[in-house]
Length: 209
Image (cartoon, rainbow, N blue to C red; front, side, top):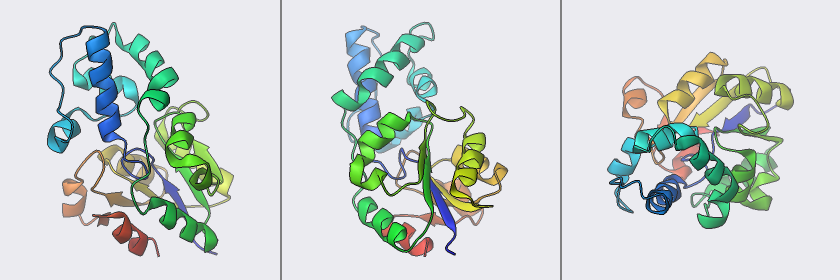
């Protein structure tokens, strides 16, 4: 039977770095924090503040630690409505084609499962056996990957992600790792170490065949 595939969401399936930075700009203005945040479209600058979960992202962007819990609450309640996130072009087709080949699929994200479903849309979300986020699984991504393996009835899987943290968690959970370099990090270090890293959704599709 085909090998299971578990995906990260943000920066892997969903094009969500610009909307996350837009959220930071909105709350920066609203709470008058006076931070200098990356301009829309400045990918290297956006990548410098990217982190997960969202409390880490906000701290890296320079928000005062005392304000972060309230901002995380605001993020969880209002992000999806104010900052629509869409899948990267090609993702719906890739997921459909893996699903129709009988590949067991899951998502394990440091976001909330509600934000993941909202970003992917009902049709794409329905192709995954489980969608685990910090609201419905373990806060430790490595443990969530293990839970996903169990839910898929798989001893191991390929985990696809866009950060060094994704790679470390996947390997700790006994999974192969495939990186993508169009997300929150450029994955240059992983690539230099011989990890398979896709430069596009199309290339990712070929790597997962």
